[in-house]
Length: 150
Image (cartoon, rainbow, N blue to C red; front, side, top):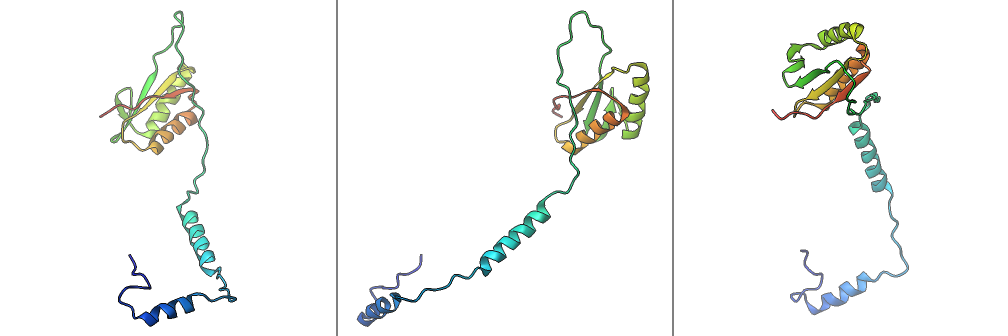
């Protein structure tokens, strides 16, 4: 804390001086806007540098529904996204091989369903990249399912 301008150790004449100089009547101080402009400029520069200039786009996902009892469908393919890479039905694959295999499968079964399951700790961008690869390959039925714990 700051000491009081009037303390017990001050001489008696000091009280009169402080009170006299403290009350400047009739004269107002002008407030400078320069510090305000500086702060606003610094905030503007900060938010310009902190913002992301990525082209955002949406990917349509269908919510899984319970199939009816009489419907016989192909079992879905499972794409696992792990820290070590991609796995299609348990086999390690690269992104290009994934697109080629899915494209080949879609010629036989155009309504093939693909489940994408990221592992815990995998960046979200990796999952978005896989969903984009599948959409580019022509998959219409894909779902993002809950991550597994390692």
